[in-house]
Amino acid sequence: MIQKLLGALIVVLLLLGLLVVSGAHFFMDWWWFESLDLSQMLLNRLLWEWGLRVAAWIGLSGLLFANLLWARPVLAQALWRFPQIQQYIKQRHLLGVMAG
Image (cartoon, rainbow, N blue to C red; front, side, top):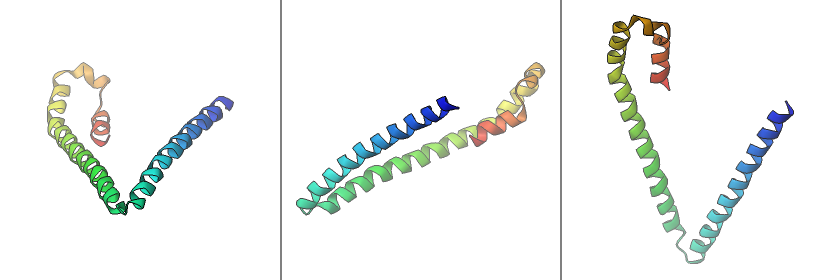
């Protein structure tokens, strides 16, 4: 029990340290752009970077989901051909892969 708490405390402290370092970097950039009256440029840059990352993640996740959806009948057919595999791989496993 103590080891779990110690592990959780270490993880929390590492995340807190990462947040402090990232926040310090962001605020330093923000104050520098603010001193030049270019804070809008910083916001535009950040929004484009993160917007593109989120859009790419959503697009690639959709592509992966469509691929798994397309492959589901092929996997079901493969399970029919090898009856001994059905002992180990069940329909719920395939659904878990589709949901995950």
